[in-house]
Image (tube, rainbow, N blue to C red; front, side):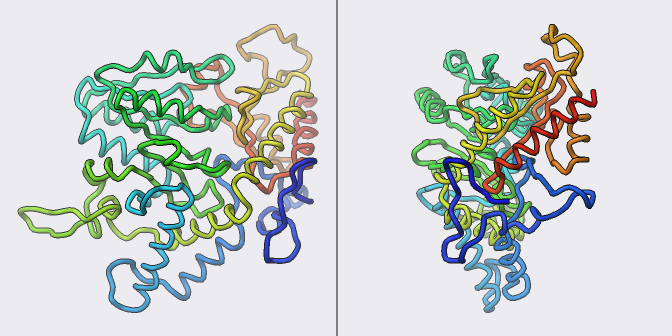
Amino acid sequence: MGIESENIPLPFRQGQGEGTIREDFPILGKNIYKKYPLVYLDNAATTQKPRCVVDAMTDEYYNENANVHRGVHFLSQQATDLYEASREKVREFLNARSTREIVFTRGTTESINLVASCYGEAFMHEGDEVIVSEMEHHSNIVSWQLLQARKGIRLRVIPITDEGELRLDVYEKLFSEKTRIVSITHVSNVLGTVNPMKEIVRIAHEHNVPVLVDGAQSAPHFAVDVQDLDCDFFAFSGHKIYGPTGIGVLYGKEAWLDRIPPYMGGGEMIQNVSFEKTTFNELPYKFEAGTPDYVAATGLTKALDYVLSIGMDTIEAYEQDLTQYAIRRLSEIEGMHIFGPRETHDAVVSFLVHQPGIPEKDTAFKHYIHHLDMGTLLDRLGIAVRTGHHCAEPLMHRLGIEGTVRVSFALYNTREEVDTLVAAIDRVRKMF
């Protein structure tokens, strides 16, 4: 199965001979239930890993494994060099000013929790406010609610339109003398909405308020320049950009990271310790207590090398073309309801399908095929999709539904797979 759209073909792997991108991902050749070729459309949850990522991690474990930063011996220095090279690769990927602004975490969730905890501890008090939106992932809601329980802060929520876009007119009116931070998703993991982040940051900075960007669904799909965005914090996960699980990144402007306290205490994040007083390490190590997952950092480096060798602009163009093709094809299905804006859709499409034979008079989605039923039956046909509330229950409440079926695309997905999905949905629909 080739990986090309009608107009925007992805390139061959440079310097490695001919072959399609899909050949780099062995799992894509798997048969499901020993019958159907795998159609993997759950990339917003996690992407598959190219062989080069797994090989690099295996090689490090077999040949260069030692704890980083703490040894004078050869292996430790090798491992440390690899780990710090990973930090430089992330800096390059985000166009940060300095590696001092790159903190390794376990993922987007930990990065957001780190900011909520540390920034909240330093700068927020009872009655202070954080601005979030109706389309946030739970990690960007619950983190602040934990701070709310500890310190009595308040969440202010930007509403969305019926089309799934932020109400920027309302956003501007949410600021007050109590606003301390804005924390917003770059791309909705349900609606595919790409939020106007530069405008969001500009408005916040006019009020001298910093901005945290949840980049879990943006970093894998298009180029991110944190200096151009001018955001104060940016978080993303390795496993959503073809890297390993358990590794993520928090970018923070050096001025902010200097001012906030560390997230955890332990080895590596200290300079001197006594029972009377502890002094903390320099950036970014102040936020990296304990032994890091340095091998996963190497895997992340290889994943970033991989996407950069293809080109983020190429990936964006290909995935946008594929997503628009999917929306057109899905819209051909009778009773199909697609959520989110049509024009600013990133590589995520969420939908429900009306049960055939029942008039489509209700607007409360009472007679739609349950998302779990649809997802289960699609799985029996070899198609992996995500069902449920997608860790965005407040958004589901806003939409008046319990959950959706979500398909999400990556650089290895094809129009042929979209056609297979459409035929399968129509087959499932007829069962009802």
